[in-house]
Amino acid sequence: MYIHLGGDVVVPDKEIIGIFDMNIVSTSSVTLQFLKIAEEEGFVVNISKEKPKSFVLTERDRKSIIYLSPISAVTLIRRARKMFE
Image (cartoon, rainbow, N blue to C red):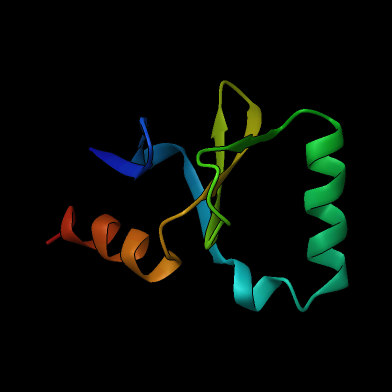
């Protein structure tokens, strides 16, 4: 199954490693450093011009991709759970 992350981005659920709320993780200096390094190395894809509400860590072909999504982590998690019901 696939999950719509916002904009024109849809990813297979099997590629998703984690879905994270930006409000919560922005309080962690380690996570902010991780995101900064990932962006410098070209692993971050900003889906929208809006301020991101969540980020989704994925792996495709042994390469990590981080999507900054304008959709809340709660909504993305609900979409993922619906597929397993």
